[in-house]
Image (cartoon, rainbow, N blue to C red):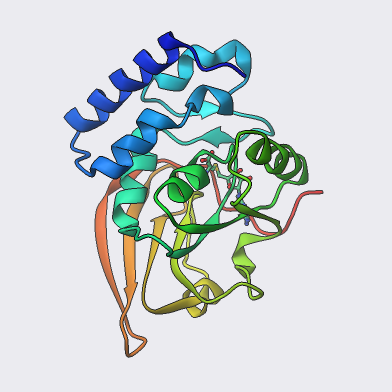
Length: 215
Ligand code: SAH
């Protein structure tokens, strides 16, 4: 893995593009400036890493579009030391963005092959602090709960109760909700008294949140 001058230049262009599209949080922009996103794609497709598009990775999955990663991250209002559960590890890029912001990150993947590959890769690129879990995200992680924030990076047709239960009072859950091709990006806040409030932030398209694991 090599991070060239050219790669850095392409990253700066991507940062400018994200800024132009309305991403204003400097720390999030710094994550895009500093994390070599081309490491997360197959070498043959390295040039695609810095275009603002979603891209296929292994096992019929996608690495989310940079803008979508930036929006989901912004909606989470990440603070240093936040304990965050991500559902859908995929390439590991989103998990690294959260770790870059100083969060303690736990991430769950249901596909064994992808899980093994990404776990090894995160150590190789210096993000071994991200705790990778193999399992079904519908179950969350009872072992490490409760969480300050929970982020779903696959489309859910309903919000699993177990995830709401694993959220701390005052916590935030971000989810692309909807069963069809298009989902609404929702931010659910669990108030101190346990009741929920919800805000909606436009339409996105994610791969489906599937039940059970795939060995
Ligand atoms: N966050 C990823 C992109 C995720 S794509 C990144 O930054 O690259 C969605 C991922 O969710 C896929 O890898 C898919 O296998 C996974 N997924 C789908 N349903 C799941 C479930 N029930 N539990 C855990 N992971 C799931």
